[in-house]
Length: 584
Image (tube, rainbow, N blue to C red):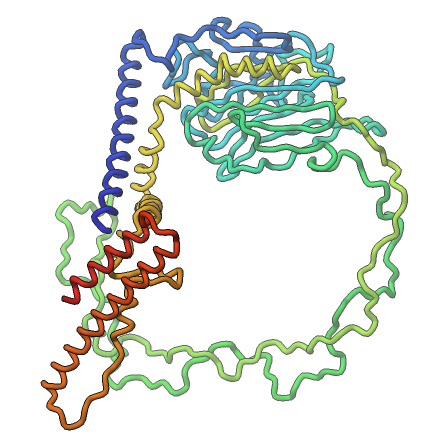
C-alpha cells in the first residue's frame, strides 16, 4: 500500500518540478526577448497605433500623436499669479515596456498638483445610448497617497481648458484614489436639482472586491465605467465586473428626497420626559460612605528595614571615570563625573524611606443613587411630519449634463503614474475591439513575464510555510482515494485477511466456524494426551467441513443447470484448495 502511495506521490512531485522548470524556461525566453526585441515571440510585437473600429466621442493612445489635443492648465493660485499646477507631464514608454513603441501620458512630478485636459471630438449627450468610459492606469512606482481619476467636464461654450482647475464643473468623476490604507474607486456624478437648480454630488457605493493589489502590483490596469439609459451603472477592472448598481438604490445621498420631512417648527413640549430611567429619589447616601477617601494609601503595616541607610545617596560618582584630556571648559562646560548606582544600597536601600502604596480597602468612590424606571417616561419624542417643500421625483437621472471635455486634475506623493488608451463611446462592440487592440496585448506581455501557477504556489509557500501542509494534503488525498477505489487490496490486504459476506452461499471462513467449537476437558486425562486428542478431532472435523462445503458447492452448480462454472465458482474452489493446504 505505502509503496504505491509514495510512487504516486513521487510522480505528482515530478510533474510539479517539470511544470516549474517550464515556467523558468519561459521566463528566460522573455528576458532574452527584452535584450533582443527583434526575436520572434508569439506574445511580443512592436506597437502599432490603434484605431477605433467605429463611432467614438474621444480616443487617445499617445503612441504617435503625443500631446496633440491636450492642454496643460495654466490656472493661477487664488492669492498669487503663480501657476497652481506646477507638476510636469510627459509622453513616454513605461519602465518595463512589454510592447516597444507603446507610450502613455505620465505624471512626472512628486507631491505637486497636475492638470491637463482635452476636448471631446464631439460632445456626449445623455439621451438614449449608454456612456462607456475606459482608460488604463499604471502605478509604476506603486502609490503612497494620490489619485488617478478622470473628470468628464460639463459642456459649456465658455469652457477654457487653459483655466481648468478643481472648481471647473464636471458631470462625472471616475477612477482610482488612494491614501494611507484607504483604497477607493470613485464614481461620482453631479445631479441637478430640478426644483432649486443646484447641483449635488452623488457617490456610488463601494466596489465588492478588495482593491489593494490594483495599487501595489505595479502592473497597468484597465478601468471601465458603463452608464446605461435604464439608470443602472457597472464598473469593471481588467474586464471583470467589480460593482453594479442603480441610481435609485445605490447612490449616496439618494437621487430623490423624501416626500415628508420632520416639521422644523414642531418643538418638544417642556413636560415631555424621554428618560427611560432616573436616579431613585428616595435613595440616601449611607452615613459611613466616605467620598473623600483616596483610592490608594501607604501600607500601614510596612516597616522600614533595620539596615536601611538613610544618609546614603542612591547614586554616587563613578570612581573609575576621568575627565577627558581634550575637555574644553569654554566649549564643553564644567565636567561632571558620571554617576552609578550606590553598591551599598543593594542590601536594603538608601535615601528617604517611604512605605509602599496599596489599594485603600475603605475606598468607595463617589456615591450615586441607584437607577429605577422613570414613572413619567413617555418615550422618544418625534416631531410630526410635513410635506417636503423641496420634494421632487427624477424618474430618469441618467439624463445628466452633456460632456464636452475630459480632464485629469490630480495630486500625488508618488510620481510616474501613467495613463493610456482613453476611449469614450456609446458602442460596446467598438470598445471591445479597442480592448483587443490595446489592453489585451499589454496584458499578454505582462502575463508572459509573470511566474506560472506552480511557481506562484512555491513562492507563496516560501512566505507562508504552513501552505506546504495544504499542498501535501491536496495531492495525497486524491491519490489515497484513487488507490482505495481501484485497488482495495492495497488498502485492506490479501483476501485471506478480510472478506465481506453478502449472501448465504458458502463463503471463505465458514469451515472454521464449524470446527472451532470449544471442547470440554475430560476429567482425569493428562493435559498432553487431551491436547493430542483435540488436535486429531479438530483435524477430522475440518476435513469433514471441507468435504461438506465442496458437496454443497457441486449441488449448487447442478441446480443452476450444469455447464461450465462461472468465475465466482472458480474463485471459491481456489479458496477451498488454499484452505485445505493450510490445514495440512
